[in-house]
Image 1: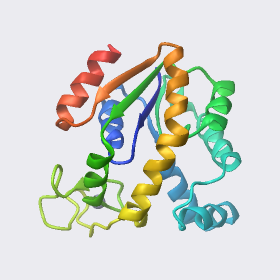
Image 2: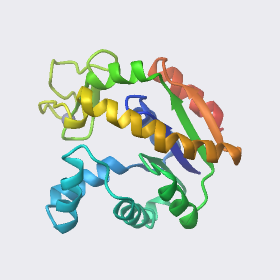
Image 3: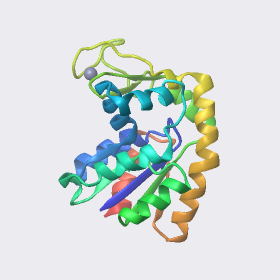
Image 4: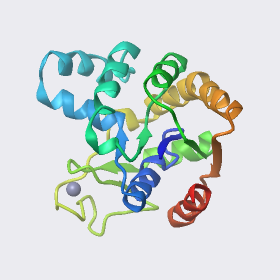
Length: 207
Ligand SMILES: [Zn+2]
């Protein structure tokens, strides 16, 4: 099953996509993670990406499309995937339509107020785990349960950057969800609930 998962920053879509990926045994593809991996390589493309992302800007469509097209060619997506963070706008959605068909679109709804509250408390680990100081805290303050490294806060998780990303989400991403609704493949999930409850809700929708 080819699944897109949408939700404003802080909606918990990453966590839900992870749970879903384990359950359905299909990969969770996060655009942000792919970008971070490329940036770490410090090659030409990595430097170009860093020049946008470090300023809190989104990468250009052309680069993003190319990277996603490459990723969706890998054999592990043969049985399907959960794509998170893409497409972000109409140009990207049109591009994706040319590559493959989407079966289901899940939209996790949270208010802007709740989104800001959650992101402010978000902490990351270099191993890829994410935490929330209130809803999903590490066992030991500031330390990852999984690997024992120190947690950090992403630059774009700071208040000014959060507001800008929410603005772009409403302006550019929500209209494409409206387009998918016309195809009858969108399921809306109320996101201001406990993680497990949302997960069960999504599973019920998909099965
Ligand atoms: Zn870790």
